Length: 588
Image 1 (tube, one colour):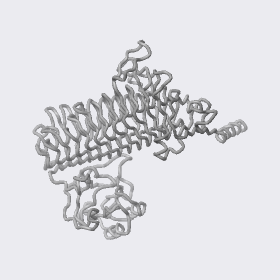
Image 2 (image 1 turned 180 degrees about the horizontal axis):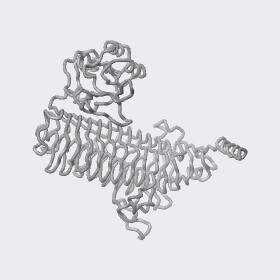
Image 3 (image 1 turned 60 degrees about the horizontal axis):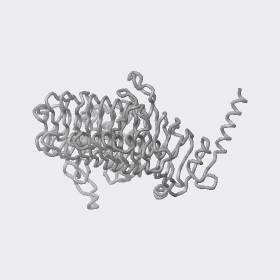
Image 4 (image 1 turned 90 degrees about the vertical axis):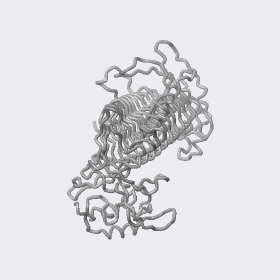
């Protein structure tokens, strides 16, 4: 047995050592596809700059297909796979994965363009099989889940998924109690530009055995039926979908992660930036969702529908447009957690519109400067809604109310600052909330909201970058330490303070708004709380020193140890920490 295992191990090592590298083009392999046809698992195909008029298929092989330098944007731009002349017009996707490829099949460093999609028979719980024209730039089906990395995917068209379409498990379509097997493709560090998902693409399906029903969803990306994609680090801009998801569309038990993307200037009828629907619950984290449009149908930035429960955390959702939830629209029994988001300066609608009868959580968001009509404003609640609204700053939202409820709406509203909304803080259906359950109405005193700095001012020395000098700020926001004092943050994404025994700190103090409870919380007020209390447990001690030394000389504004907010952790911050050494708050 040992000899057998030794032989197998040796064989595997030999296969790794002798993995072949192809350099395209050459005499023997003039095209990319000819090299793929010859390649075996673990081989690498390196493609020189040029325009390759091909529609390629990975053929189920775990190979690396890349340009000569995927990290060089100039090389990526001039290494082009152009799929606008397919041999079979029924299969016009520029790149195809259809043989169960996994993340070891890698496409990296190309401009993918000219694709027109491929005909697939699609079926799902609420619909019999039908033809869809899918995946203009890249199509993945038959449980294929590749790695798509560092490409420019632009100017492709299809009925579904103008840029990329990934279709997961088709087996369990008529049995909702047995949801699909999940796959985990990786879509990372790409740029999606001007891809389109449209109804009228002028292609007819190959036969009439199945109905033809095009919808036009997912301008850049579609993840459909058990596709737990990791979509991270991408720039997704100026893509269009006729119906759902101008930027991206996650549907049918598709979870995964949407993180650290820039989703800019996309448009569709529903969900201009991101559209999540049908039991899908991805993590939506740390994205910039900006200047997307969905008109009157809903969800200019983000649209969540039909029993979908994503975690929406630490995103900037700004300058999106819709008359039905300019920032976000939540519909039909969905229960997302909406926490620590900056939802500001959205256009012609409320920051958050809620038409879901599930008790979603709206916690520690800054919802400000959204332009809305006399109804909408900050948060708009329809009949049957019942959210928990806690620790938010809801201010200066156009002509609307801070929180507006239609007949039959209800909410748990506590520890919020609702101020400066022209129609008032709350309409009659919601009732007066200021002065009860920790709710206040006061100017939050943002540092510079006109220039998108929604940190809270607090008295003490503050570095003025515009004037390049220290200034004394004698204004303290009432939103500092005004959040729910008993609030426990509660999951692994949180910056959770602990006491020396490793338990949650009692009497946790938390700011209202976007930065409350995060590592980038605003500077505590002078002589009110302790500046050097990094972990916010009410005392300055060795636990804070431990936090401090881990970030020594860090730069940027996302660390709680940058006490003076000059974007560097240095001796000035250490002096501030030392001044508070061994002090503690009265409430500890």
